[in-house]
Image 1 (cartoon, rainbow, N blue to C red):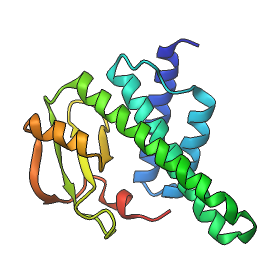
Image 2: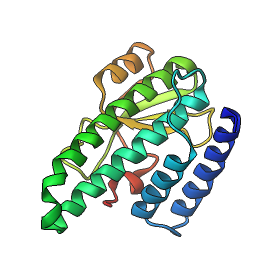
Image 3: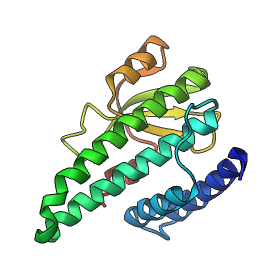
Length: 179
């Protein structure tokens, strides 16, 4: 299957899952789980990343895997016999978040700052408060990304698209819902 077919399948699946989540037909946990399974069947991340679409794919791939690893780590708390695996899941999640940030940086490099806005988001999590920011790329469908990465924030600041203050997230329910 060509890269374009993978991307077509990815964007169709992504749109369907976002709609299902928005309508309340699935939970955030199901959304993450379904996306993890789908992306692992579809293909590995793109390397090198040569288009905005490939960067969007890589962001979703690593973001969903990171969240999946975090769910696995939480499951270790419920099952004492798996406690020894928890740190491994947390380490894998951390690595995926770093890879997600690399995809975000590449996406911004390829797209450029036009039609991009970013800002710190209001969050229920004290751990994320004042650290998590949202990036909205207005000329791409459902292009809303999150990061805590200082290098990405610096790029956004230098581009003049990082707004002052804390703003409500476009995905407020999603980012504040536990899974």
